Amino acid sequence: MNIPLFFVAFVACFLALYMMNRFIKKPSILIGLILGIQLFSATVVVFALIQNVLTIPEIELLVIATGIALPALVVAFDHIAFYRKRKKMGITIPFIDKKEKRGKQESDTSSFLKNVELWKREIHAMDVFRSLSVQDARILENIKKKLIIIQRLINLERYETAADQYRFLYEIFPDSYAICYNAGYLHCFVGRYREAYKFLRKAYELVKQEKQWGRDFEDIEKGHKHYLPEDMNLAIEFDIGYSLYNIGKYEHSIRHFKKVLEKKPDLTVAYKNIARAYLKIGMDDKAVEYLEKGRMDVRDSDMRIVLGSIYYRKGDMKKAIEVLDEAVKTDEKQIEALKWRGKAAIKEKIYDKAVECFSTLIDMEPAEASHYYHLALAQRFIGKNEDALRTYEAGIAQNQTNNTLLYYYGTLLDEVGKREKAVEVLYKSIQYDEPLEDTFNYLGVLLGQMKRYRESVQVFEKGIRVFNKSYQLHFNLGIVLEMSRRLEDAIIYFERAYELNRNDPMLYYHYSAVLLKKRDYAKAIRICKAGMSNYPDDAELIYGLSKVYTHMGEKDIAVDLLKKVLELDSSFVTRIKEDHDFKTLYRHPGYRSLIAS
Image (tube, rainbow, N blue to C red; front, side, top):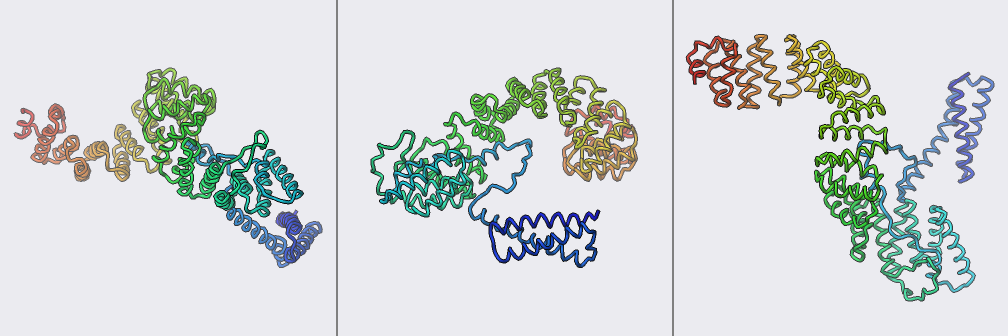
């Protein structure tokens, strides 16, 4: 089978179907011509496939050009035109919804920002009908039927069709504030915000001009609502703010929502929408101010979660717990509220509350590894290490390759004295994908402490292959190599650590000590002095430098340095007396007077 030709035939036939549909919906001479060429090309390539012909490259290229490239241009044109039309209409919903990854910060905040709230609903069809002034009884009756049909569409949640119908009515009654408002509201509801804004601005102007607000509405059917002028003004102002928010004009939307609050200061939905807008423009402090006012809505747990998470990130744990407690009271199974509440409780050292939160979360989401991590962390803080071990084990049973749980389980096993088990668990952790840098570091140090130097070196070298810019891995490998008396290799890794970070005094101590053992005095002096330039009053560095000068035979310089050490820290006198590196100074008068004092 000729696979490339088969593919060309498939694509050509598929595009032929598209062009046929395009021609039926939007017939034109150009599209008809392209469709004819497309059908001819598709026919040629299908029969060529059946008869196993069409081997001349020129003909094949012609078929591809006419059967694929030409209609592909039409497809691209249609897509671009449709995209521009959607953008012009203010529709922000994507063609294909991306599958969102649930990350560590599933953004309770981003969810809150997306779900901006509307306030009023549409004006009921009968109220719209009663607001119209039409003299012809038959026309009025037909309009009534039309409005009832549209209301049924709304009740059936066919909002797109209802919006288009109100758009049609607007063309007939461009001076009806009710039709204008409903058209704007429904366009807001279906995500066509730019069109909604135009309708709502028109409705706002019409409401100001309306002369017939004093009509008798006593005969309005039960359940229908009549909007007074002030009510209509506020509803339109609110929806304008809503449409501006979704268009991305956040400062303008804030201005409109604030106008609503001037007349209706108890409207919590306006406070929450203002907070959303402030969060969008990065003004978190102002957002908090309005979220606090939004707490008047006692049923909104999502808003409290956002407010609590902001307090948590700002470090105000007491306020975070207070707000999140309210969210949990509203909904005891509110997962996001329990997460933030539990983490805030750990920060505030209220470990019993944290244990309660994360135990509940484990029951609700038994496969979520972070719940086990936080529960075990709280248990470790209150000294319940056995409970923490069981928590880690339960978490690992659910998430066998979770490196975070394996790492902390291994560290706790080490703390309780189960070193061999800890080594086994930590080894398992570094075998899985995306191991933690801390795991390599902890395991390497642990093996070094157990004097299993060869294994320790292998672990550190493996870690460095994964994290080649890790200062800590290079430094600790240097120490293990020093302990195992592989001094030349230790110097190599200390030098690499020195290139990565020159702000750790411990590196200067160990690096200069190894250089001293290798009798590389010039380099040892250079490293000590480099350390002293960063830490001029570090007695340990000066002490190490004095050793180097002692080995070089520079006794006077060595004694002067030791005097400076004792000036900085008199407790060094015992170390000086017992340190055999200074045995060549025993007869030096300065040294003798130094230790005598």
